[in-house]
Image 1: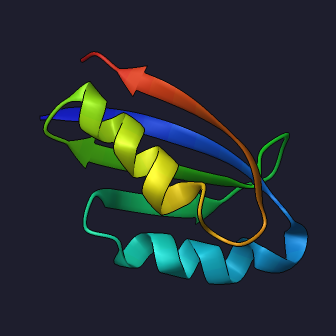
Image 2: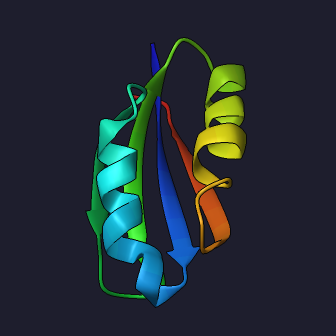
Length: 76
C-alpha cells in the first residue's frame, strides 16, 4: 500500500461539506480543513501510485468548488 497527502484549494462555501464527503470515501483515510495557503488536507491510502492519481482525479477534483490540488507522495 502507498500513501499520499493531497493539499486542496477550494471555494470557502464548500469546505465543510467537502470535508464531510471526503471522510466518507473509502480510500481517503483522513481529511481536515486547515489554515494557510490551502483549505483542506487529505490523506489517501491506495494499492499503488496509479490508483492515487485516479482517486485524486475522480474523487477529489469532481467535488464542488475544488479549484486546485497539490499531491505529495509519501515514500516512507
